[in-house]
Image (cartoon, rainbow, N blue to C red; front, side, top):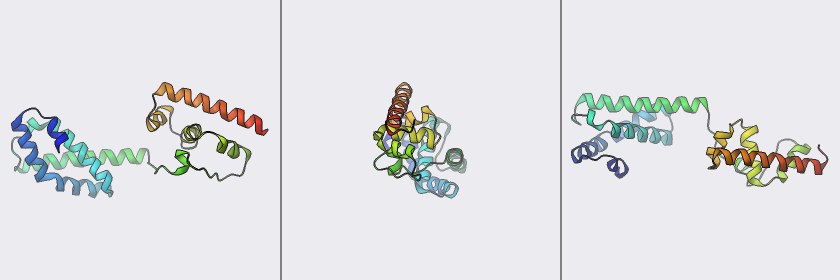
Length: 172
């Protein structure tokens, strides 16, 4: 709650937000969970809703009014639906060892798979995310914590290294 309070300058609005937070946080979580059916996603939706409330705290006149309750529930419902739609467009997968490059098991027993296994973990991770999981360079850059230009350079180096390994193995 301290993070939200730091975003509010007026002491009266801070007090109002504290009251609103303690009064409606459980209801908001319950509402988001009904839509998302995932506790972590529900927490994310509630967080996004509180950020929206902080930005519009002056629109709330009193905490205990039915209108305020409806406003809060509507915001969290919309945030949960937005998150649900986002998850539907791009389903997330848990990062497994194969994706982060710690140990790799490939389905195929072909030469290209053997060459991929010889790549440094960072190169292999980038190529798998980019071409096996069909992420864009911008998305991979964000996942790996890189700038877009650094991601393009990493892609170039990974491809060159893979080509070298494939040539040495007689694949190319």
